[in-house]
Image: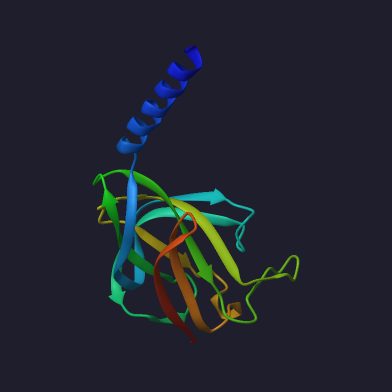
Length: 168
């Protein structure tokens, strides 16, 4: 009898927790283009990324475009709404960047990377959810062509935005 009571208690607790957890139903791209920094910069070392680091900062869209010049220190990306409930809930999403051939070549190892995948926090119904790419100080060494940004919730793709990077 104790086992049955314990299992029923576990089932009830799990259903209550599930009902209170955030649920992402989709994402909608609301802006894409060139951004500039609009707040504090935080650099995080991340050996899983082609650059070895990622940055977190507030940004703002300055030019709406999907054609991006390969220029040093250019920030580009997309702002998106996370759809779901409850509004204001924090969720962990993934930004997947896909690069054209020959990929992004690590100068230290000569290994080419064709995809970067990073987890970030987003807010359901938030207005400042942005995934961006910082071309850094060596933009001329990056591949021109179509770069693809995908927004994922676990194994479910929510949105896609293409950018065409052109040499300067």
